[in-house]
Length: 159
Image (cartoon, rainbow, N blue to C red; front, side, top):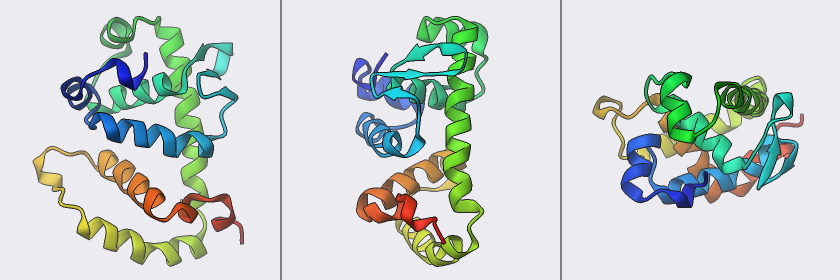
């Protein structure tokens, strides 16, 4: 299952992002997550394999609203619970490792805080209109990384 398998309405309904934003998220995260395999075939724990876009879609589907792996996600993705769990654990672990580089480096945090706050203030989103904090964070990271490609580069986190 890939992003292009969905139309705009389905993307917003199931993943809470527009189709073009989902593609941008995948493009921005792929080189930074350090997953085993290729873009079209990553290796998860227990040696399960799936496309990278599918893994991101599984994560965003799970985070978009309270959904259980069984039966909702099994039916939607056509995968068994063990496969979905392996994908989620793999992606969440990689996202955690990526985020910790930024959240645990006080120098980087101090330097980038003004930039993040300015970018966030320019966004015309409201937390009161049903948009989750996670969605704001992902959109903000993608926005900043595309406008300033060096921000999510590994050299920024090295002291």
